[in-house]
Image (cartoon, rainbow, N blue to C red):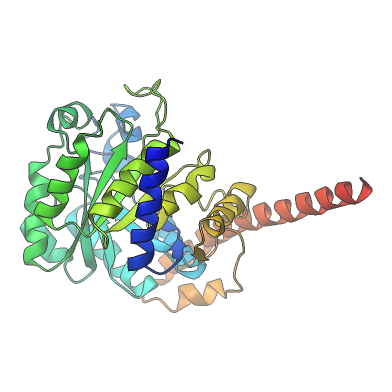
Length: 351
């Protein structure tokens, strides 16, 4: 790490400490589909889906979606946002899911489903606290390449409407697609203009069959640079850092650079594994208390959690079934890690 980057991160860490408690958490983005009616963003997994497969066929089961909300609530995870492919669910379907999600977690949530027209946003208003614009990059020329059918203008209009409705506003930014450090000025101007409350700073995950499949992932220092710059420029901005299972070693650096929380991690699949333990250890290394858990299942009456909801009987039974599948895998991971640790301790004792 260069002295310039090191100095920048030290400054950003001080700014963070002056404005936030020394805590962090995992934020879960809950998806409702794996397809999109746009489907041509050149970095995105959804663009690799078979062209003859209708996006509506990529919907997740409602029971699976709601089971994940129940898990998130009881594991102490924040809901980063509720999201999925643009145009996959109707506005009425989204409203019903948002209402159920509110009941489960006991609060309104962030919504990221593309640019939402004013009339539709009004429909969602009882259930959401803010909207997320999947802006990805602010450089106009780069944006045309990475999001050819997803211009910024509709998101800008959505942010203006959100301000009118007194909703919070968030945006996404992906490091590693071709932006330069000079673009930070464009990003800062955008944040100021639309009074953005939160930003998700992701690092590019090169996807097969996209134009970025052979592009190296951005370094930890590069992702940290963007976070630190924004932390210094916007002391009270909520900054979330996206990681992946092969990037857990950068968590402490990104937190020191001024990130509030962590996301983009397959927390359900990898719950209780070594990489999840590493994330919690990285948070401690950064001097942060980790809220919630990625490693220990709480003592919860899961059936009671489902029964208290005002859902029909059939859906409740389907949610219980899906929860049991999730929990079985998570328990297997935890038990496997316990056994592995015991074996390692025995080997060390023999040595």
